[in-house]
Figure 1 (tube, rainbow, N blue to C red):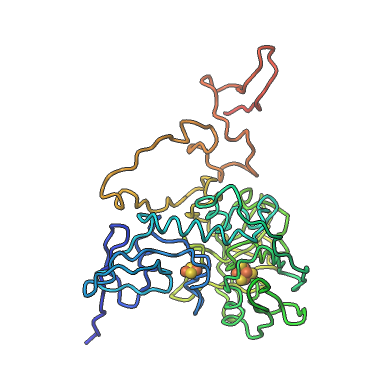
Figure 2 (figure 1 turned 120 degrees about the horizontal axis):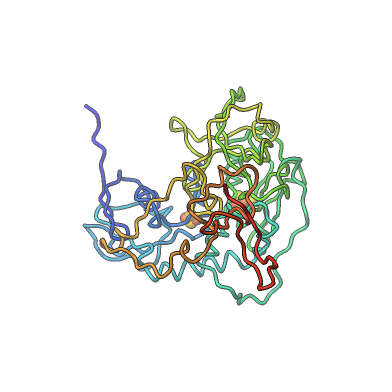
Length: 393
Ligand code: SF4
Ligand code: FES
């Protein structure tokens, strides 16, 4: 007889679900989805031992369990706390959590440079998203920021140590995916840094996966650096018959026209590599760095982008709208919209599909046609054009 799986009932932000015993609060919240799931900068479900470093996933436990309903005195990291039967957790419904998370973001940004305009991770950086949600425009930090000697860690990966938040994910990739780990975290405290042992290059078949797990722009793809912005590229799902053991061969190609600018593993809605048949979809360096022609790949179709990120603003075909949980969290009441951006601005017109535009999008692509559907734009009294003119068919 099959063994019965014990389940626990947990309530997170007023939404109750049953999960198997041993599930963490973070994974229970991810099962609910939407904004109820706390952000995670260091936890990565496909890397054993990850989590517990960054404190962005803190939640409030308002009742520990049915057996002991006392609240937990301190906020707890949801990636390292298992659910108990009858537990009541508050994430976005807790002011304490929002306040603490803003503090954590402030700490993470103490030494992190605000170089998003030139950073290749911009548009898909989890710290950038967090900063916009919780950040403050000012800083209280008065001391010189950490700087590091530049270090070359090989032909494929660029290390920008000033951007590193010491989440340890890349060292877990090195430990768990490659057979020759040559890098790690050296020194401690303020001096802690990612480095290779006596300036060795990182060379092994799966080292490129460190780029995919890095939540910020500390590890970026040297073959893609400064070549394009992710929101100007068009992501498509593709696969090839890769013979490297351990490589799933399923990737996302980031195209501009027919040119493949970058190859990455496919990501899920939490920004982690997708799983296939219960195994993480890591890809090898040959697929990532050497197969840069569309002819090397079988293209399956436009990638479904479903994260709250600037990339999804491209209105790609098949865009998956993230699960909306606010109504349930608010006990069935809908939030009151103070302003609908589509009514206020011509940018982000939901009728415009970037994936149908040939080539990169320009500002003119977002300007709505005038009522006559002819030339349009804004003109001064003397007829000089202020805004660009664009004719729609
Ligand atoms: S380099 Fe990136 S993945 Fe590695 S510890 Fe730093 S932030 Fe994390
Ligand atoms: S994601 Fe939980 S502590 Fe970093």
